[in-house]
Amino acid sequence: MIGYRAEATVNEGGKWAAPVAEKDAERTVNFERYGFMPELLGRFNRIVSFERLDKDDLKEILRRNTVERYRRELELEGIELRISERVYDVAADECLRKGTGARGLGSSLARHLEDACFEAYSAFERPKKISLGVQRGDVVARVA
Image (spheres, rainbow, N blue to C red):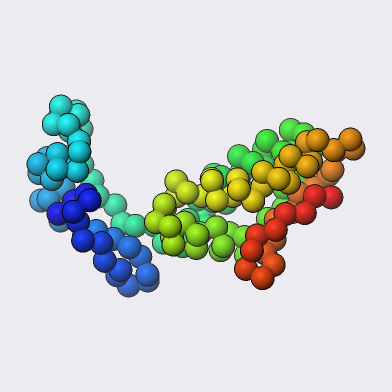
């Protein structure tokens, strides 16, 4: 079964998954029950199910995509962004706990960067660096 009625289980490695057999993925009625219109489903050549992302996958996506976007934006203003390894762990754990997967990475990181960026952009003398670290399990930002 696919969708809201699917029974999510925890498998090895702490990954959440709703098991989907290939024959179930090919039956459009399962997707219709989830809310997809048959007309939309008819436009897909093939429907493929993927494995859930684990913590290492999320950390890699965070490094290569999300952080790089922020880093480039800050570099345009002459500000260096430094992020400790523990921040990647905290962000990935948060997304796993909430079940948001990779989509939640940007908002997780943005929440920690917003105040630091506001402080940096509004300072009379532009700071040279924003650093994100972890203290007592919480992500903290420092502007210098």
